[in-house]
Image 1: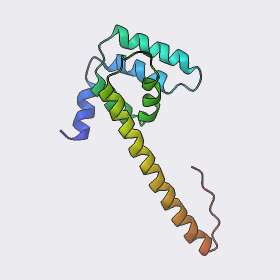
Image 2: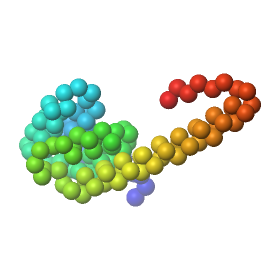
Image 3: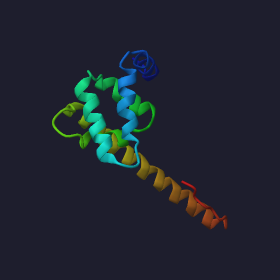
Image 4: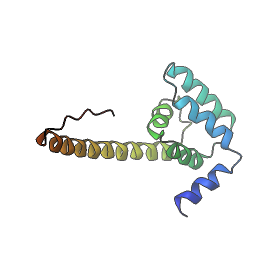
Amino acid sequence: MPEADLVNAAMSKPSTNINFQILLPSIRVHDQSAAQWQTLNIIEKNEIDWNDLFIRADFHCIKPALANLLKNVQGNIVPNKILEQLKEANVENARHQLLNLCEFFEIKKLFDESGIVAIPFK
């Protein structure tokens, strides 16, 4: 099934609200312990569609934040499969960032050689 079809199928599920209730605490900047507690309560009281949650985290580009939250939730309540998928996604994300950094330095070198001042913003 193409990725767009997976996203559309996931968006139409009734678990949408529950999954967003897990995604929101994952992007909290402050009070991570409250986010972990909130997430634990959501998981304990609801049936989570872990596949859908992963797809949504991917769609919103917050898999690293979700991984950080779920790996710190107390107990063995988060399936190892989802934790492993998020870990693999983090490794892939880090690899991608390193490739971008390498490209940046190549371009910066070309600018420097041409006497062009470049100021990176991100």
